[in-house]
Image: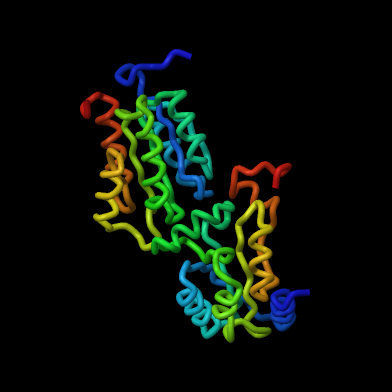
Length: 147
Length: 143
């Protein structure tokens, strides 16, 4: 299958969660949101094992990897997952973002955001207004504004 | 029949609504506080110990590591604590007037069941098949 260029017909997006997270409503929401914005989504579903995620990302070499978690373990697991992704040479420059309910005590932890960015994520979208911010980010990415 | 089943059955026969707040905290003291508050609420209540997602998915090593590192889990890691610890959470909170059920969420719950039985619990919610889908990637044939 010929991959589309990002600036031609939307982004190829891999949508995933972490291994311990069994929720899917967030993944379904994001799949619909991204498709409505004109992007193509591979939704890996609930409880995605680290090695399966890495293998899929290496195989597809997507334009964007979106990790969503709402079970409260997203921060803890997200640090480990991004380290595995960034250890692959072909994924070093791939935009990777994380969002959802990343801790059990709610949003607003700036130290958590800093740690996730330092670990290798390009953006962190926590609760509240994060959907608008996420949409703006994806729009900018798809027109090449983020380089 | 478990104490849990008896309690709910008697309440139903008496026409009372049973309220069961779902909750699970990683630290034993907080788990106990939650159960106590539920017991003392102005309603006919039963207790729940909801397990954390590492324990649910069989990642007990990850649960132990999180506890050791002080990471707050999204539930009570029953298989990581000695039975005496869970007994101290339950005693004297849980009894025939306030039964406690374990919401385990696991497709493969054997280790969890061993732990809850060792702690003197005997009521669980859900089953292996209902927790294969939509709660995990484990096929029913491999549960």
